[in-house]
Length: 163
Length: 226
Image (tube, rainbow over all chains, first blue to last red; front, side):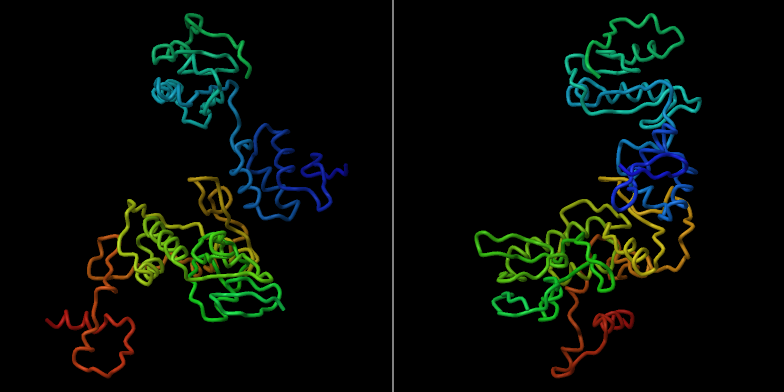
């Protein structure tokens, strides 16, 4: 396959030149997210309007415009988890860590996101921290989980489940 | 030349024409919100829909994007078309109750009530401004951002774009950012004033033609005199 370079990064090139998505993937692959400056530079280099990059980057869930935290907190908001109060759990996490849904804490430690179902409905409501599954969560357990002494967290379910 | 039937009329048109072009050329009245002659068709507003195919197997398509084809049977004013169109207008009214363009459409098509809660949004996502900016102004400063219910029109990173020359074409072409009609009851979603006003000049003079636009002008004048 023909290769082209954008910002010094190798980008696969189709018959009509490079596509917006492959450029964004290359940038995200290098930086871990899509920095504003990199998008501006790439837009200038390829003589493409910046809004083309921004539209695609905001359309696909896969692209991130802000850096990801070192630890990823995922709450399940699927039907079973919702019925058992995942909304309150998410609120509690958001309050404890001081982070909004879909964003990262200021110190870059945690990022919080919601997914619709991870297929572990028996453990509802479910919180996943860095691939480790914590089932039947309550507000208290959330506070313990993110306190300085996380060893006390009882009834954790290790990630035997596929991610 | 392509031969097709439109509202029972056998007509032949140039290849490449869309059904909307044909319908407008032959005088069929089709409303649009996202169509402009100078811009590429987009098919977003769905107001221009027409029924194609034989009865029983017919379907609704947006005429602004559907090319004229050989032996096509097009109907522009069936009950199905009108009902769907009224529904779409009602939904638009709930989205943008303050737009004069949409209020006028509602009046014209007899949409006298809105069964949905008004949203008071500033945009119907017709994409006219995006296409205007790209195709006519050659700038492409604005575009669609985000997806689903969060979809909106903005510049990249929501700040002033380098490409934007502040030409104002996006606002010029926008169908919903006009000031609303200052009818008798401004507060309600749909005042229907234009429907309910009877021109008073007709009572006095049977055979005169009124050139006042809007005709309500004399009615309002009468009110202020009282």
